[in-house]
Image (tube, rainbow, N blue to C red; front, side, top):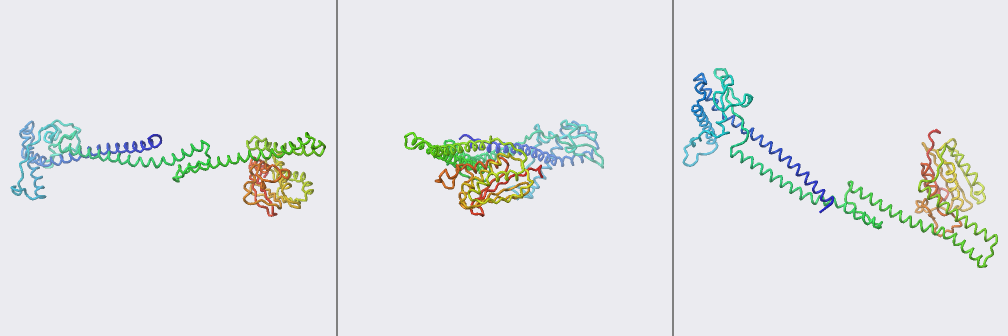
Length: 485
């Protein structure tokens, strides 16, 4: 197991382990601290009978002198205190349970002797006089705190203090056993939680890595040349979005590859046709079948010109695709640009029997930032398309509209039209509605591709749609120069 899957499992496992260790450490610290506080509180409660005994002792003797350094008397008081404390505890137990067999009601076993081992309760009890001077017991820090001292009052006056040296560590076997037992259980719970996390992390990591593996396999197929490779989408999260983007990229690459093959095929066909005519004519003249007269030379010249025009269009299209087509933009009036093209093509439309109807008054006073030569090329390509493909007699209508910050020119011609399924393909290079159409009767299918690049270079849009006159309508939208108002 390697790679991202192992890293995910280790990440889940390490995060859970660190969290559990931190939680267990804090829990153990809190348990130890809390249990020590509980034991200290219990020990303070156990001093109450001794406190009463010392109060009674001072009331009788009115002094601590007899008790100073008198270990025997001090142990006796402890023993009486312990006897009363045990009797009280046994009385509480007797109220909760019936007498054992052979045990008289209200009787209990004798109390054990006072615990004198180091750290035991009696060994940590001390007595101070009212001036905080030690009377008997272990030396204690003066800063022990009021929480561990019980004032001894007689006749409303404080005559001394009964205190208990705090325990540093637990020493009772039962208390230590309790802490160890809780620590062991907490350790087992933590190990169980880590094991459960591992059991969950493995299938979860497998589920998370599944789309990555699918994407990786599809990428290898794609880089190996299989452009049909696609990755299955498993989720709607970021990985799912990445997979969708990959599939879109693969589809784009496949589409570009199909276009490239079609592009090479179409260019070969476009070049082959005039070359075949030129070759056939020259071979016929060389073989003496045809005489090299003016008619034959004009035919050869027309094919050479057609071939040169095609090569020029291909070169210009390649420049515009690369973004290296030279644009010399300046502020120009779009109305003047359109009227100049109309003047150049008016006699051609008249000679071909196509009526030209310009409705471009809305362009008056509109200035755009554009290259005047490229705009002339744009209008010329659109009008040339109408001359090539519109039946005579026919019509061409040019309408202009102005919206907020934009101007739109629509070139609409008459029959024949274009099928709706072919309209989205019109701006593809070398695309022809009629594949078998004679190249002599039309262009190379590059005009609209060049138009599209010119319009986009000016920040505009170009669209094709059916014309109300029965033919094709080309709508061009360009941004208006803001400085012109």
